[in-house]
Length: 437
Image (cartoon, rainbow, N blue to C red):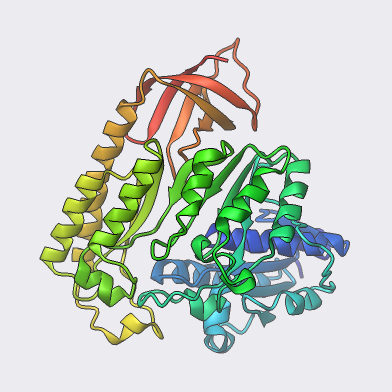
């Protein structure tokens, strides 16, 4: 007997992991809505049918996904929900194990099983719904997935196992999707893929990210276009020219570099070197002196010596990235690196992460302090406590700096609108500003 009341046949979608997973959930919910299904995202008190979109990238993400499945399996056992389905990366990668270990789930689906999942939910996959999604972000920004999968051979990464080979979406479909988003109030597009720079090679036999950017920049209503997850090897340099000449393209790039020591880069199968990486970053900054560069690093990769770590540490100090994140290495089965000995102790991995982040905290504080007295265009995301919270073009939502503007009695800033502000003071990761116009 059900112990709590929820709408019959209401589907509650739970999303774990990255923005690419969130996008997939939005597509799923768009299809369900078009089929006349009641659907919500991460509702606390709605939904007798639950779909969990899992992440299987690294140990922490897998643990969170398994714990969430167990949590809802218990709810099903206790009668709080009627049906439980699991999809996404973890399910793609470990489906036989999950079916054997967690039997209260009604069915497991992989990352490419959307039509089958919809059928299990009593819905039909509608091919004509190009660009139709039920967005979960504030309506003024949205993620735009331009490709699926990855052809890169990185030794540590299990994404190709879960997402398959790189597959670009046609430019015309992406423009259609952007137009629909803009019609619903979206002003900022955040382009995502496993690798943006590979875009177009499968469809057009050449890298055409620059061409896509030009097409998206023509969409009325879109004011900012932001690039996430650009692979450094084979970076299409014509993208820099488009960024320089097209004001809608944010002076921002997320380029996960992972490491800089040549022996580690070689073992990681990154296809680059210390010199090539630095030459690319130099080209970025020569073309766009104001560009904000975000990167991601891995500490504790197999064989990473104190010398390798010192090279990495010195490089972070010298390069002065605007934004930086660090992960501890996760030993993933069926990857090339899994054949190597995971020989860096967990406590050493974490200590190295902490050391890099302490360096970056100081760099971020210095870079922010240099912005005091300057005026910037800011997009307002929300009101929180005594402040309106926004971002400059140099910051992506949820992961980067925020601009805090006092919410005085005579100040009202609307979510999703742009304003000019002057930075009055700065912290390590926040700017404090006053409204100019």
